[in-house]
Length: 202
Image 1 (cartoon, helix red, strand yellow):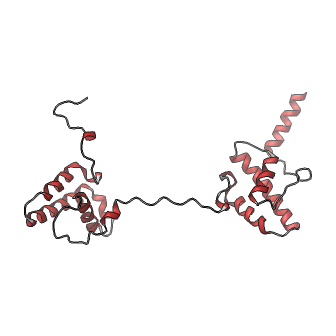
Image 2: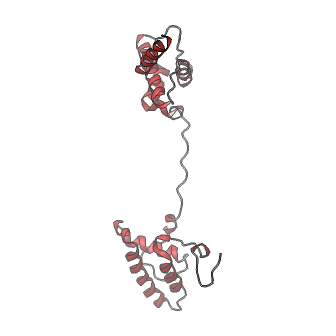
Image 3: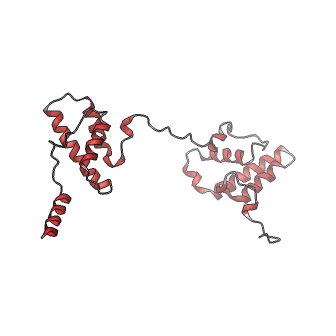
């Protein structure tokens, strides 16, 4: 609904740097239209003073005066013809958006989050370990930690087959857990479940 005499922000031109507000932008537009360079220069210095008052947190920047002049340059759409006290050639970088970060391609960073960095590091270690008692012990520790992580972060799942499957997958098939001979540590959750089942049979 449009009401005569009311000016809605949604109908106005989008601000280049919204932190300075529309009034400062109007001052910049006015300065651009001034007929002489001397007038534009005086207007620019006045606007810089007002910008600093309007946005005082800019003073936290060690070189905030340069920042203010860069902002003025951008707000003028690069059309303000004055003697700039700083080189504003790189001012456009302020408005540039950072490039999106590339997703990692290495498998180490593609493990499910519920296993965490410790288990992820164990996967990598197991890939290169020679067979023997040391590797068997590390497999035992890793498998039990994986099961605990699944209980804590994997929506309560305690599926031994899932542990074996994940262990094989994330070690590139090097570790094949024999569930017929491998014994997981009994967790508190499993003990409680066993007690409940005994009571229910009575």
